[in-house]
Image (cartoon, rainbow, N blue to C red; front, top):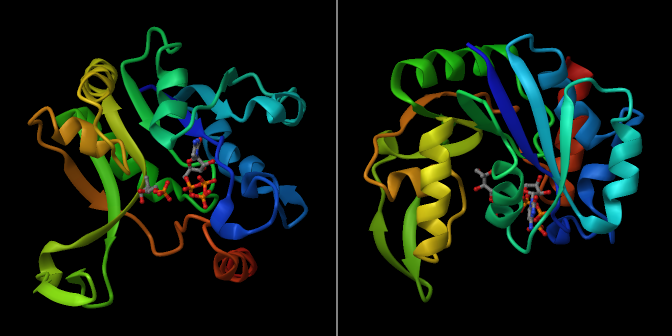
Length: 223
Ligand SMILES: Nc1ccn([C@@H]2O[C@H](COP(=O)(O)OP(=O)(O)OP(=O)(O)O)[C@@H](O)[C@H]2O)c(=O)n1
Ligand SMILES: C[C@](O)(CO)[C@H](O)COP(=O)(O)O
């Protein structure tokens, strides 16, 4: 199977508190976004890579990927993650499947990619995640409302993989209905479609806060 990947990289990285976009932070001598994009550069099934970037970082991103044959679009990001992805999605042509992967998740493995490819081909909608290690409770105004059944709860990662026309339909529907979402799957779920889960790895972290950076260095050391 062949697919196109959209990589949103147009965030501010506010929770990292660096004062600049965390995807440009160097780990092991290279910006996080280079590590992330490499997984798709090296995957023969990935036909095209589309990035969504902050307008003021367009030049630096173009320079970072100037030697890439696969990076075929560098698009302006939007206010929210979903707006950034939409701006790239409307420019994707001729793809059967689209994978969406956070620019800030540099530790994807081939095994996770393979599981997603198999499942999306079979079902049209596949996401990856890991079992939660903690007990999760729903808490409102400091009061516990509910304890979630741990065997039914998953911490969801990216990539998330969809049939191209389904994802386009889901994004248009979400925009028309002003849905606020925190992942791509939520928009497909809102259409009433089934989304299937495959196993991710605990290392497939999103670099979100400064603690994640220490973890990132440890993951790299272990590779
Ligand atoms: N308007 C936005 C917001 C986020 N992202 C991207 O979506 C991914 C996941 O988002 P997150 O970790 O929330 O990144 P930031 O928005 O940069 O972080 P923060 O919320 O701390 O500002 C990142 O690769 C980020 O660059 C994006 O392309 N456009
Ligand atoms: C899509 C995502 O990475 C799945 O875990 C996550 O929901 C993005 O959330 P954020 O608020 O943009 O960090």
